[in-house]
Length: 483
Image 1 (cartoon, rainbow, N blue to C red):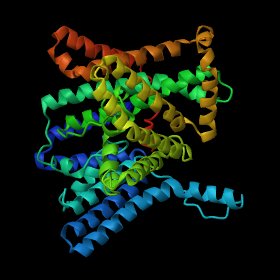
Image 2 (image 1 turned 90 degrees about the horizontal axis):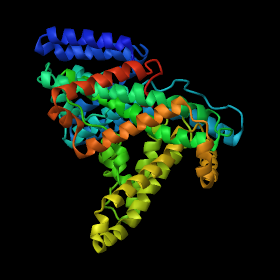
Image 3 (image 1 turned 30 degrees about the vertical axis):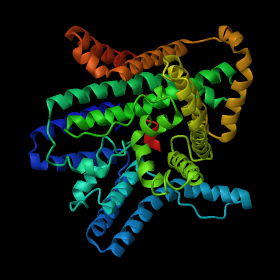
Image 4 (image 1 turned 90 degrees about the vertical axis):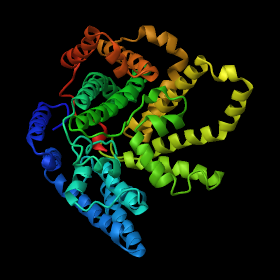
């Protein structure tokens, strides 16, 4: 029951009607039932994993909230070990076993689990883990009602691919604030339309070009690979941020506010800004609060700070490994490469500050900001090659072939047989960049609200027509729901 399917829209309509008719005190139960139905649509067996995570989180949370110090520490350790241990085992055990066998004997001799992590498991396992840590820190009260905790973990807009919402802000809205609010509903519908546009119009029209080039990477023309690399940067952004927009918008229909997960990431001026406050913000905050700071953060001395930064990005690479593009070494390289970017930023931060103090007008100039944005984008672009490639070898082939062709690029461009798919993809990317640049200066929602009625409604009707005419509704699922 994907967000882009007719079945989901029928499910959503039925849920909204029942929600409006239900008494206030029972609405959260209705939403819990709807969330379980939604998750079961991806396989009834998935509910077993979900119930197990909720049961562990609820039982451990109760002990942490009410037990003596020794019991609290033991319950936290046991809960995290069960939840995160299960995540690690389901995602990596079979892969690691195969790598060990290949290195030692070349023949299978280790047992296999043979069970893949269920859809969305990485996301709701992290939410459950965050809940236990927050209860232990006193940042969140231990939830007495297992059903309310289950709604937090299983809430259907976010269970497949986030945002990785914190329990405190979410549970504070249940059940008291569950209502149909016309203002929130309008904002929610706008986000849903924009999220669907990014997914089915932009991302899914870029996907065939990307998939075709990476499928034959050793034989594809360098220009074809270069186009695919650029297209993939916007494909994955629109696919994932489109999901987040839809999730936030769906929640607003029921009076629930979720955190913003993307903030125009390709306008970041540094890779640190990209990862800390613009791309997958909820995951970045999770790693900051539950891994980086507990390791000592930046207060444990410079060598430890470098190690802590790299640890965060390597673990992030491991977390991303999954069904989306397989479990392999590419995600470790991707994580380590982004960690190396942060090392370079830390090492040169003092130099750039001194240069900025010496040349304040240059430091504040728009052209320098634009150059920094372009540099940051291309650094992230290189790392996406490892994210998308099936193997490290394939990623290196793509990089080598593009690098070798760069000197002759001016001559290659006029000769390349561009297609209608290339033209459509480029036009959609250009439109996206314009919208995001305008949104960075002043939110598009505010611009439209202040615009004449004719212009405002024309913009939304244009979006709907684009969904109908250009949308690839049967193209497939969201990339990140498979991680």
